[in-house]
Length: 383
Ligand SMILES: [Zn+2]
Image (cartoon, rainbow, N blue to C red; front, side, top):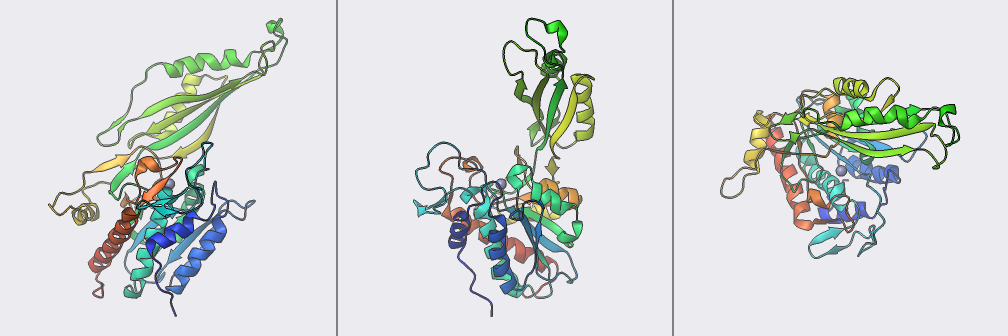
């Protein structure tokens, strides 16, 4: 006997009350969600993505893994960033509902989106007999999409989706893609010596700084018509322990944001050449940019479905920050993907994070309409 479908606000509140800061508590939360999905007929697999840490996990759920036809895919993450140092007006784990908003860490990014996916899927599962519907809930997104890139290494978890939605906060606007990120660490080694006798040592800064200056010089930017320009910024720098010693190590980090068309391997090679041969380069994070052609039939149909009462369709848009869409794209290079979910993007990661309740209800409604439209297209008359 299947349970009643939870209310989307109640479920989002339940999720916010679970502490999943930096991946803690992921597994028990996902086990609870797997129970809900199993009751509705889903086959669920929980998989750890970071073996020394058993609480870190992904959940892969499929409604009918053997069903013919292409499924619709939904993805989201259950981990959150820390609360930060500034005091909150309300306890970040309260999940308090006030002033028409759900309050707490993750309400916007992105437990609200996860709740909306789950409620839409649970509600429509009984109408989808003989059809597959694929839901992935990842851990570790806030630490470089760790869960989703782990899942992407075994594409079998995805089944055969024909289109996908990542439910990150976009104010329920469909976004066609986002920038990529290439984070590099540049490091040089030297030999310590007394500051009065620099000739006895090797100064690591002397090796690092010429390359750093070359990196600061203007270089050509790549431009995407919607996502805008690529960027590169030196973000941290560390060297030396005290003023009267020659530093034996020096390091700096470079945060590059890329647009479709840029090749991260070529970019890394270019940075290595600028840094110089005395500098060691380490890739800290490599998340490619994502873009889905907005003129693809499913993308165009989705914009039509989201038109306002006057018939105005949402504009083709994208975002700067990266999401699990990059990992899904790595697993399924031809899969059309849209990023679409409740919550204002600017509220993500903030002190006093919150999400409008009407966004949550609207997101569930949009997902249900997308599911209905998809499976009707695939020949399911029951919807
Ligand atoms: Zn997120």
